[in-house]
Length: 627
Image (cartoon, rainbow, N blue to C red):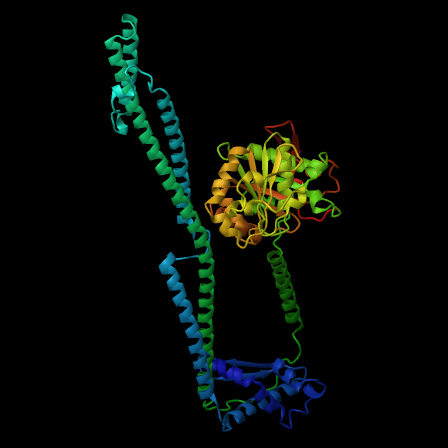
């Protein structure tokens, strides 16, 4: 450190100016035509410090050979003269200022650390990354599976209970009062009672063949059968009540876990910002301490005794190194070119092809929608499938419908949400056209406007806006039927967004939304939700967590790798089941046919029609501008 301080001191502006002030230096040929003599001296000066001893070698490389030793000697003399001059320093004041600065930064660091510790006490260790919510996600998945099993068990118990009540002999001879109260048995005796019922029924058939109606033996056996039937019905009823209670308990636990997962995601982001601030404060303290150490070293170096061992001799070579300069230029040019290429690749991370989309997102590509002419209005573009069914855009959305039919699981395909990483990706246009294509395929479809802060679907279909999803969830509309409106397209209805609420996330997090979604799923074959962008609010993640399937919509001419990955992870992190990706604004290739601008290689047939298409996705450039 001391040797480095000597080198920096010799090449400092003060010493070089002192060397140039010598009368036998400033008139040398080396500086005669120089615009800035100080820069010429600094560029040609070379100072080397021997690591084994405290010997410093000073040399100068310039265009005039005879001037080099005189300039080197002048620099050494200037250094000796500078070191021998008495100087007043303000080192103590500078160090005191740095100490105050360290104290301020340390105070900010302590405050940040206290906040992080408080968050860790309330939420545990919060770390950013794809494993940060893995435990909560696994618990949410487990609760979802248990809730589904409990729902099936509850439905089966209710069916058994209804069947048992039908078999009660309400008009049996002697009446119910004659049979007495039913026996209360445990659930493990259900099989025994069922076998007893079969045995008694067989015995009753035999007695009826022997005796006339009204025989005391027949009446006694009928009363016994009625009593066993009532006990069996009571057993089934208890099993139904237990299954229903377990279902409600699991539903409450699932909703609480889902809300906690969303809250922990927000806290994780805040914790990450605090961690970044903490690292920045520590680096700032380290930099200040390094400056203080440098000041201490400089103060020690100022008292060094300097001896002039050997004066400079004639230079062996005082001309530019052409070969070395050329070699260094080639190396620097190569390094600069490679760095520029990697830098451009890093800065411009757009997804330019279907292969890049599949590789980056690890999701199936459901379809690529060609770019529509810019002269089309938003309302016309959103109804392209209905207004121009023979267009390539309509064919593309029918291809998305075919992919949905072939890839969607049969056990959960009632509710579908379309979400995008950023605004302007085309979710409203895609949701409306896909809903029309689904309705034309024979499904009863409900299109829901999830843009509660800025609804748009009422303009597309020309329906009323004063009622909608916000008024139904907020309780201003007594029935959802008053908010659902016809679109003019067969089998397609729309639920507009309604007046914008103060906080849409609070409405969607209320218990009313899952109940409404379940009610709509029972009435329609498919419910499609047009969700806002993932980066705009938490609404899209809430929709994804509540719906069966999620489709990510990205715009082909401006989709970025980082943005789409962040959106995918945000939707999957709350339990959303991602089905695949739909790309909008695809390129219309110059060699592509007019009716099929996006090639197909694999064939897909819908379940509701005979639409077939064969798209060659591998040869489609989705990122280019339209011709």
